[in-house]
Length: 206
Image 1 (tube, rainbow, N blue to C red):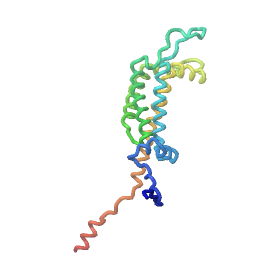
Image 2 (image 1 turned 120 degrees about the vertical axis):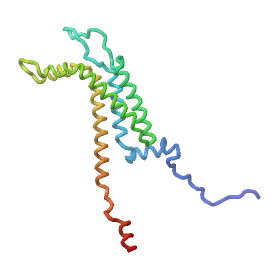
Image 3 (image 1 turned 90 degrees about the vertical axis):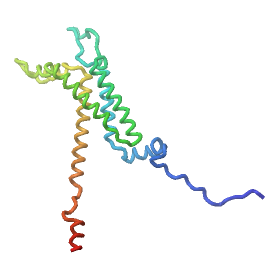
Image 4 (image 1 turned 180 degrees about the vertical axis):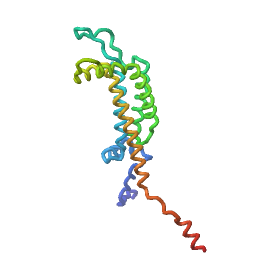
């Protein structure tokens, strides 16, 4: 007597939206990833931030060698210096924020700016102090061989400083491109006609 059956179809659950956790961590996130709804700049900046971290884990200054080619003395990484440790800290913070931006489709940009300003300041001080070793091979007297001069200039710095320098310049380029693209979009927007609705209404009242 009490067995009652309903032939009405069961209502489907509504698709997850921005307030649903599955929207960020489930199918919604992967669909947005493959459909290009997540800005690709976030991935570029994440790679650049991780490259800065990687650079601080490599030698910061040239590795000393003896005449036999054997390494002489202790090799110090970038994080062994205060400047390298500071760059590593800001780069790790920027990497974490970029991962959050990718997963939540947010736009927190200030950690990248902090990392950029910090890196530019430290790199400027570093090259002001050690830049002579980079320039000297190209300005020495006598027979000049470009290949040998380039190799000597490369050897004047540790490999880690090149990773950090390249990543920092890449971040700076990305920011400049974003600014120019935004300025171009603003320029292409149609401007309101002069003497528009307000003037026409005034003329009609006359």
